[in-house]
View (cartoon, each protein chain N blue to C red):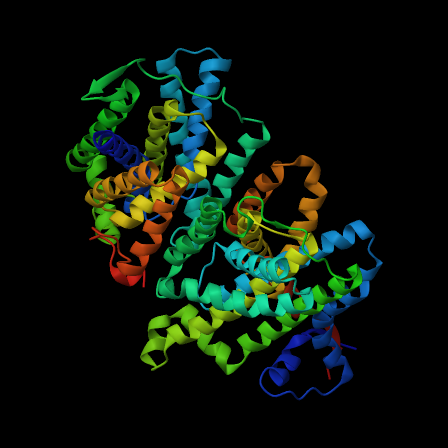
Length: 333
Length: 290
């Protein structure tokens, strides 16, 4: 009996890329397993964590949301070095609504998501025409500017911030809210980018001039993507505020800008799953390294450098490639 | 009061110009936005302090060593990191930013915080202009800023390496056909930029203490001046530093010192919105930014 090796994905890929005509459960299984991992991982495994690691998990998920939002922006060629802008705005909107008017988290979070998204979009609207590092510079500067503004004008609690906000009714709710939000963002954004709409977005990233010459208003598309990304970031901020029961200047801190970028670089840009994996590696790692204090940021910095130089594609594309290269023995007829 | 503001505004402008020169040199020649610039500034400040106070070396020697070390860091950064991601603006920015962060936070980790970390002034004492007193150190800053600018002009116009710098900046491919190695020039431009950061640190830091936060501020100031003036344009740098320098001093004197940092941030935002290429940019076309 003669045998040869066969790549598993070839036939499945040809049949499943455009038309969904899978011929067996086995093939569906092949496609489904990688997509089921995050769902099972989040909803199935997470409840068994100890209370301490549950908290770590929540902050990891917040960073993962910011990283996914960063990844959406990069898909449209918008390089953001200031995810903390979204986080900070979201946390201040939710915090202010709760602090001054006593709204419950049930209302502040959706409102902060929308209002934060609109506010950030309006703030970045004038610089949407900029490309590459010039857009990056503005986004790096804006949160720092707002931080100074809060410090100088002493609005919204000034350097003290808004304290004593309403927490979630119980930890379980917050735990599941963030997981579901994360899954929606992950699969929703992947769906968007794979659609025809996403094709335009990716086109803007690859060559905006040619998209423009096709008669498409790229600034309108960029605005929409910016709003989506900013809303997700603001949601993370609003959520984080109610978990910490505090909204203040640390919301604009460099941590919230740097970690999502580092996660995306480590995990693989433009894949959405990559930044999530990156966040789930980096944040728990930094929690383990907490004893080292300021040295953590040193590690982030070096991580960023090492991955950019040594594995520029990131972990997720690497894993994806290996998964597609699985082979099996088949008989030669 | 007004005379004092004018004089100190001028000094502030010189400080800004001094800070921005190195960043601008690297970007103008090799196109690398060195986000580790603030870190190198702080690094050379602390290194000088260590050489002076822990090892007890003479002042001149430690200054020379730290300028040399900063240049070596720039050189090593180019050959170890930048050369692998050259041309990918995003990767360059993130790699240098990450490295800068690592350097600065390493100093924080080793507890380089406090008032005892300061560098000595060159000469003690002060001089009166009208009824405004200025210490010698600030005068020296002005002298060195003017001197360095002149020296850079002469260097880039009358030496072989300087001409090669400008050649690469103007047209890399044509420069290559003349046998100019663009990697060597890129590495040298990083080294020169880092060296200039070290000089700026040694001259400016005696005015206050050496603090890690200073690194971020230096980076933002350098970015502000370069963006307002137009990255890669030396005339633009000088005009922009005068503009921002006076704007900062006036806000500090007539509003509140808190607002001072906001000036450079607002300047960046406004210029990028209104005239993205900067006030005096001629090398870089608009297309690159919009």
